Length: 464
Image 1 (tube, rainbow, N blue to C red):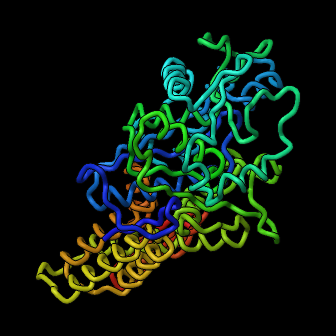
Image 2: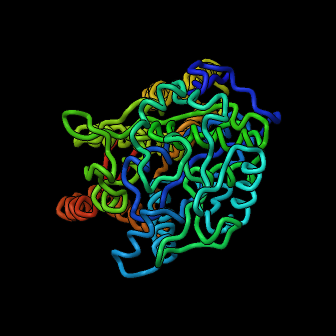
């Protein structure tokens, strides 16, 4: 049985979706004012693995992830570049899809944008005001946090503790009733993008956007809401308060939060605000994106990941092991193999798959799940069995690595045919004792990154 650690209850809970066989899942997406950094990619990959595993287990996943395309950071970036906020958003949404595509992150079923939901946001806020959960103040609209009885539950803090932390924040320019109250609508500033509303020209606050898009594109109550640990408070706390005050029902049944990517000896969180980030855009130019993907996909989603040369080297070696295991399988399937059923080996494959499910059912424990895949690669590399076993081993290998979004580049048919022809020519040269030509062909292939291996079953090749 699949169990998920629910941040809201701080307990490992059996997963039971609202609708049998279907999962409604919302994950907070990026604020599109720059290229995403490795820390942003960690969240995208972590929840991509969650989604893929749910699909592997037979669920139909309606996966929604938004773009925040109205924000102070976007406005400031536009001013820096001498362009519009819309142009900035468009540029970095396109870059997001390019970068996450390189990391083999599946596209969401829906990527809603704030600018397309302004009317929905205004209507949502109007309901909150009518219920007494929000109030207008000099063109701004604020949420009245003290009215929401469960405020602070996700952050595991009382109102008193949160009030203490917020004390001293109110000044002459701050027209909030309480320091904890947060903006639902911000009045327009000069030369900033804005929309007309019942409270005057302005734009939405950050937190209201996700509440509106999640409930509009999924339901008032969704199965899973995900995001980085840094979003627990105030963003997700405020989403709960807004959504449940408006709908009167529970917002999300399971809250999942991924750990940070850290850098340096002190394991400092990677973030744009600290200036210690590396963008995916620049990293995939110097590191194989498949390696980056494996490094982040194979860690438990709630654990931090240290980004370093050592972790990259380890992921590179592990990716090569996986790629070579698949090459071994493909080569074996080109040789003469018996067709008789081998129940002993088939039973081992079944046991390996069961181990994988057991590992991943424990809060999507990717670290244990990838260990099972490495166990499978060892079995594959020493396997001497029937064609049926090799075919089933290949199918299982690809099925399990697909959960992690690990892809294996295949050579084009033309290139493969060219390599095979050169290998055949080399074999003929060796037979005719033309060792100079034989060595020339090997050296030529080696210079192109093709390694030849002479085995009892014939010559094999792989990319270095």
